[in-house]
Length: 512
Image (cartoon, rainbow, N blue to C red; front, side, top):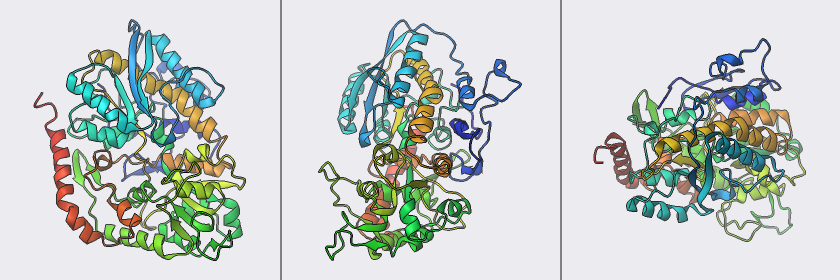
């Protein structure tokens, strides 16, 4: 397959370049940041597309050649295993046109691929609970049954399954080209080691975008409490955890008049879920589990500042009247959940709330107050860039080793990612999300910044329940600020796990 390690800006950001000011934004890794290129796909558009006048950005996207040519796959059934964790809508396959922008974009994309290559896209397995899919896959692979062509589900679960040697190396799949703009830079830069990449992130996995963590900001409440222009604070590099605390720690109203703090009914300055919302600070504070140093993968989790990070976050979420989390929260459907921050914000009971992008589309449509979207705060002003991560329930892509027609699978997967880049992502990001959900152009620009700041960490994807990626959320959730002693107890098992992961990548294919 083709690969290209040159830094590429996420090319779908083109959709704003004609209408909005260009903002500085971070690249796919956690070390470099450059201004957004107003024409990042100029080098990938076919030569015949040269125009004397600038192309409309959406039209320019459609001219990026996938270089797949024309193939007749003889009616091949492309069987996809899908999970819809986190309440996501299915963006792999839909029944038909409904008038919903995203649904219809999925249908249009699939129809274009099916017609072009004479194939049929089908759901081979589809569950909201990804844990039900893993046994199906394991049984099929161990039996040598070729029943699934592509997996599109929970990235951390895929990372765990990959370590059982169930998946093809994407670099061995024909017609996959990671240099194209429909593949995340992180696939090459963070998720590839020793030339091996069993789990990849492409535009077909739309939730890798929609599950990116952010901070929602109730503008009306902000005005009531004399907040400064938070967009300017972000642009000036001053949006830090200390600034967020300074603004919100004293904001509390006993809305139900009970005389006691009611986390479900009262109003607070800053609220958060108790789980992956907390884990996201690890990347927001530029402290990933692994970093790439050239071709070398380095374990970077245990830094000089991480104990201070845990101590500060425990203090923030336990000692201030205006800052709350509630791990016993029950959502509006009556189920125990980790949706506390989302639900408080939807009721207008929080000035700031941690969450992820798609919640603006799924839960804030009825919110009467104007609101904005901000990146997660930095650790301090000395930290150069803003970073975020996508929740672990987001989709990623993998190909089971039982696949027999790998040529067809590579062709269809590449085509679906390409058509997602051209049809589906613009529908979601520019129409459904930006027009319907956000309320001002500055928030739209912030979305660009947030999505372009995503980090797909090797140590997170291959955490498999034994790594370090979720330790910080457990400590904060339990108000345990003793990082050093906790880590000392776990360090041996964490090191053992990641050594096995590295060994898997270094010996991949040797025992087949």
